[in-house]
Length: 194
Image (cartoon, rainbow, N blue to C red; front, top):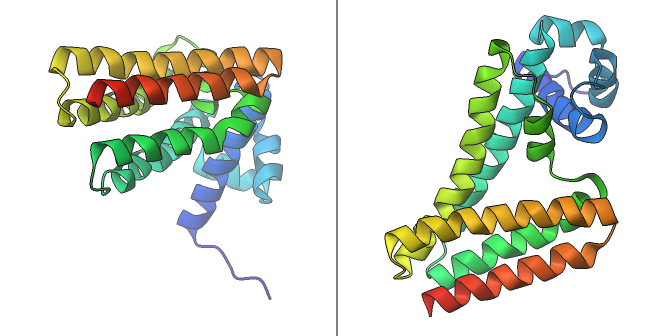
């Protein structure tokens, strides 16, 4: 007999399903029924936990935040800056096939968010994920001896170039675009920390 999911487990399952559906179909095309089907749960459970569609967007973004932030914290336990940055780029490499196939889930949702006030919490959560990525790279570079202003600028450039490469690789269905950019970013950061 299957184990009964707790209310929180159902919420998490629905949030992950929302992330996947929005990533695949886009926010505007995503439906409550599609989220329920993806989660393998009744549509009523979606309405109960996420009464408005913007609640689903926020849950999807919180799911992304809940994956990236602990990942960055786990990488931060490595002894050297070079090792931490190498693991970060290894992680980006591991995501490459899905990014080429579907684009970036975070960027997709952030672009799709309507401009009304109901989405301010969602927008702030998505921005916090991008900020966490930028700041983590910048912090590693600073710890590697790079001047703070250069580290901050480079942190933004790394995430900007990675995101741009995702868009182009997805649009062109060409993995080498993203592979080449990640390799160039590895070299850039390695050269900066010496």
